[in-house]
Image (cartoon, rainbow, N blue to C red; front, side, top):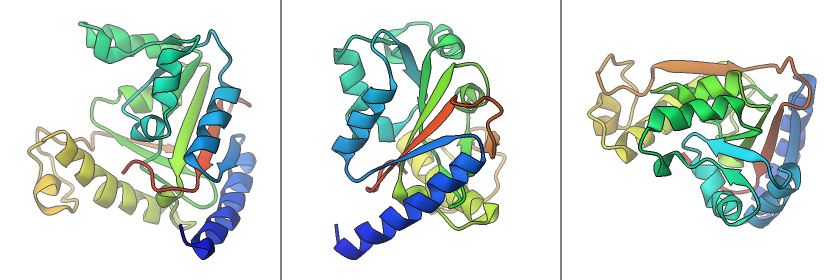
Length: 210
């Protein structure tokens, strides 16, 4: 990565981390995927029960494989015949892994969900929520810019990834649709955590997820 981009991301990450702190959340900066993985494993004690939604970023830094191979109770919903039962286990887990569809540079996290298991677990239930967020997800300071990224970048790509029949999957742009396949069912704006220490964010100097 170009040295100027690295420097810009380091400086921007510090601004985001200060914003998170003002919102009762904790932020960390990782210069590489390897550093992000090490920090995540430092934050998750061995023996913890851990689950996740569809966080591609956690997979991309190697965290999911490390948890499966390590001394953790990783609840992998793909291994459950009853997917709903596996999703419900998330609400009593020690850690829930997530990412962001977008973030403002002052620490507001935006997520859109279809089944809503992911956004509901972020909002309430698991003892800790750990976000893995590439710096490509960080937008301007206004919430509107983050919402636009979530709807016009993340949502169309995810709709294509899941093979859904939505206008955005065909055009790459949001139509504010009411398609039966829409994944824009629930919007979660995380602007403050009432519970200190519950939400942590590892910002990674890389393009992760969508």
